[in-house]
Amino acid sequence: MAYDPRLVSSAGTATPPPPPPPPPEATITTSTLPITTSTTTTTTVPTPTPTPPTMAFNTLNNPQPTPSTSSSSSSTTPTEPAAPAAGGPTTILSPSTVNGSSEESPKLRFCTVCASNQNRSMEAHLRLSTAPSPFPVISFGTGSLVRLPGPSITQPNVYHFNTTSYSQMYDELYGKDERLYRNNGLLNMLERNRNLKWGPERFQDWVPGMPRMEHVSKGDKGALGTEGGVVDVIITCEERCWDAVVDDLMNKGSPLNRPVHVFNVDIKDNHEEALVGGKAILELANRLNEAAAVETKINGDEGWENGVGDARRNFDARVPEILADWQAKWPHLPALWTLAWL
Image 1 (spheres, rainbow, N blue to C red):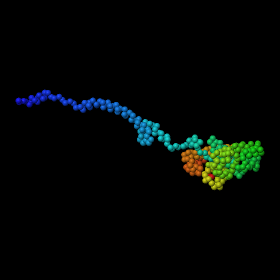
Image 2 (cartoon, helix red, strand yellow):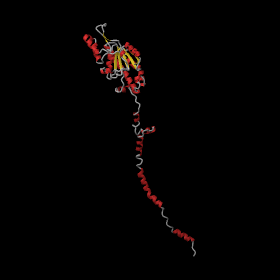
Image 3 (cartoon, one colour):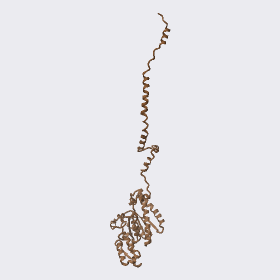
Image 4 (cartoon, rainbow, N blue to C red):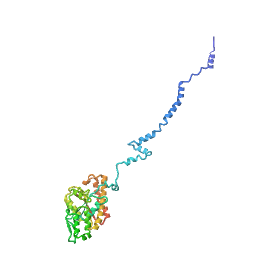
């Protein structure tokens, strides 16, 4: 049987076969895409929130921040860069700071000298030992004997150094003529003196470095701090006394090899001038002690006792300037100065 091929082709075209089912991958992708999107959204949104505070915490607790880190974090934490500066090791001390801590400040040891260790040197001894911030102080005379005015210029009252107390002198003069010696001020002067120390001492008999413990036990004013028998400053009240002190120190040969500043403040030998001179000597002592306190605070006190070290050298260099400033305030009290050795 014959057939027409065109009829077979048209018959197939009229009823096409059904399309194949969609691939399974398309169905899975369509159903899981929303789930993936929602999961990603819920897990990643809170993640950036804790990140900034974590970075800031690490930056603040970094013990060695770099300069760029410090500058970048200064806007967030402005107080942190100031902390290292406040704890820095270098502190500049001013004289007012040193004066405010008087308990820690060093105290220069002084020696006051006049002819008989009665009037001028004892007034200065009183001022220094009873100041608001008292100084260690000892006092001497340079004469061969203690001479006090008597009934006439040719009849002085004469006593020996180191063996006659002020109380003995007071009692003797009181018994001789109370009215005379009360009116000329000798009894008042001796009353002051015996409340300060036992009796007059001679400078030439002083042995630097010999302990002076008995003066502490006797209750001498200003004795505390001078037990070692050395001083930092000697202040005389008359030029001939200054000459005698400098000559005696040279004759002793400087056994301690220890520097000492020797000043002379020229004071007339009467009670009124002694009062003024004692006040001026106290001011000079305060100026010197303030300079010494500043230098030892800044440079330490190493070598001070032997005249070496930065503190001692700087202090010694400042002494002429200190004296010049003091002299400008007290022009009626001519002053001398030299550096000697004990």
